[in-house]
Image 1 (cartoon, helix red, strand yellow):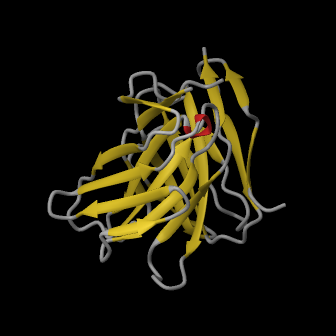
Image 2: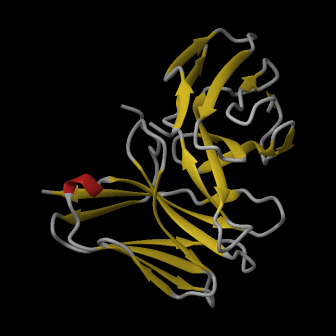
Length: 117
Length: 113
């Protein structure tokens, strides 16, 4: 059963603690992405990776870190430096659409709701 | 369930009516657009996409229209059903070399029985 999995669905942490969110895909996709979603807003890009061992900052990377040691996995760490970490976090992956070469449809995981108190 | 869009614009329609959801995109150089549907507490699901060299594309019960002159994208849903109730996002590929989609803020669709 192919897809993107994120775990856990709900995560609670105390302020000042780092926390790592898991994202795994078995779609053999090259690219993976992390988005943050807050109420009343669209998705904002945190980090993305086009290939293993390489990743780039998105629009709101401050206070977050990622790694891409395996094609299937793209974990996101929310550090204590992130001032407002409570949010819904979405992981996505994509592959090239053959005809268009450079355009990517993204498939999303179910999300992790992080609450920091 | 999750509340992903507490303050989103809301479109309320009667079951069986057609729905039109609009999106103004930001970059005239964007070359690819996608509509996503997001139900409460879930990740977005792909609905339909369109490339910038097209004006219209049809799927099953859905049509996307692209007006590049005014940078406007619309999603038309025919014979709207209760299961269509969700938040709908448009996304654009800005072709900046970043290869990541940029999302709009979303519209909530409420289908009244």
